[in-house]
Image (cartoon, rainbow over all chains, first blue to last red; front, side, top):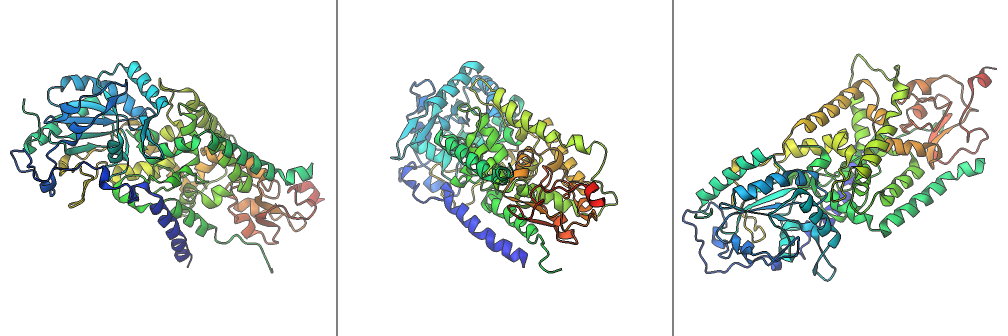
Amino acid sequence: MSLLLALCLMLPVAALAEKADPTNTPEVTAEVTAEPTTEAETETETEPETESEADAPAVNYFATLKLKDLYGNDFDASVFDGKPAMLNIWTDWCGYCLEEMPALNRLAETYKDKITLVGLYPEGVTVTQEGAVELVQDKIDAGLAIYEDLGITYPTLVPDQTLLYHMYYSDLRVGGYPTTWFVGGDGMIYHIEGTAHSEEDWITLIDAVLDYMEEQGVAAVP
Amino acid sequence: MRRFRKHTWVWLLALGAVLTALGVARGEVMVVLTKAIRICWECVGIG
Amino acid sequence: MANKPRVRYRRLIQLVAAAAGNSYLTGFATGKLYQGDLKMLCTPGLNCYSCPGAVLSCPIGSLQAVIGSRAFSFSMYVFGLIVMFGALMGRAVCGFLCPFGLIQELLHKIPFPFKRNRFRGDKPLRRLKYLILVVFVFLMPMFLNNVAGNASPAFCKYVCPAGTLEAGVPLVYLTPAAPETPAGTPSSGLIVSALAPDLLSRPDTGALFAWKMGLMVAILLLSVINYRPFCKYVCPLGALYAMANPWSLYRLRFDPGKCIACGACARVCGMCVDPTQTANHAECVRCGDCVNICPTAALSLGVGDLKTEGAATGAVTRKEENA
């Protein structure tokens, strides 16, 4: 009897929680997603194992981004076209993110011919009520302080509205910090790493992902 | 003195309400939310 | 005896509170936290907000989060909430609403030949939780800032067994850290291809995790022997609510006029409180065991004090009784 009552009382809270979950909001629609050109073919030589290969965008979404880095400089996203990318999503209050960044800095240099490593800093922007994206200067300053202190040289980008949507609200959404996306040369994500790692583990991981991407035919042709 | 002690909870409740309101006014709520919705492994003590 | 006050439904309330606070079942399936606005609010008890099922925030976690943040050095919002909960019910939060308190109680019910609440060192050890509150919840997040002005939540990171149980264990052992996209899911246009199956990431579970697991296991095992050891010796939230206990609106009432000094209440109390001496002692979690065992209905839990003289002070000296 008590258990039944407990269950009955639990349901409204669960329903309320589900309703308030922003990732369930239907208004955040697919308008902001990249529109693939319909008659394009994928340029891979091997057959990718995805179910949705027919919808694979011919345009590398990441290569179309027009983003600025923490310092306010424009970032040339054409580096993503045809070459794998490693997007390390971090924030200033995440201690482990900061701990792995010096290692990532070294790896960015070591692997620069095979994979482009950039940081992504979603908390550096916020979405206004009108739907515009604006910088949160205090957060940018925090990021810059970290960059200066750790001596990081690879760029960290501040996302735009569509990228923010992917990072926060789509089913791709970041579950925690740091999250690292491994993007193939075709702009599709081939692996998501949900935690920080040591330098040795990163080397093992990056090599494994690059091998996997080569099998899929999306690694850069040297 | 005993009357004061009987109603101390009212004073405490009022104090709590004022503190909460002040905290909301200066924007603390967003900090609470942003740190609660994405896992920070360090915050859980793993890794 | 007619109208004998009993504390009924406490277990039910504990179960409902625990279930309601962790009702985001999707979180257990996907390994991703609830991200809705309910998490602007805190539960009254200790409930880790990194638990995959949690729909509200932990007050102690949030306190550290704001104290440790770049923008603030103290949280008026969270502290204000805690003061309000304390003013209304003091450590009845511990007794009725805290999931970790519930877990310890259930463990204590497990039959075991050795059960011990009273031992030398018990009293001084009760003060440890105040030290933990000051050092791990306040001082460390306040002062151990990194270059960006942020500090880690030291209690959550180094101590909290509730977090290890509710968040650490599910996240590490029960859900993959990098969930696969189910077949046919339209995935935001950035189509996630089949994840290399052997590359599912897991967090490095090193020395810190071993320490947290050890601490959690120790407290859970100790709960079998000792009633609510975490509440007595470690919990910083309990320390805060303890300070509100003498003043809270919902409280324990003692009527010395009905007391026959049988001592049953003091014997049954898991927190080693003698309600006839100090009815609203800082260590009382308002579990109601003393209320239920009193043969003369001298004790009750309720709102405000009894109207009889002497009840408000809640104390009777043994000398007067035996005179």
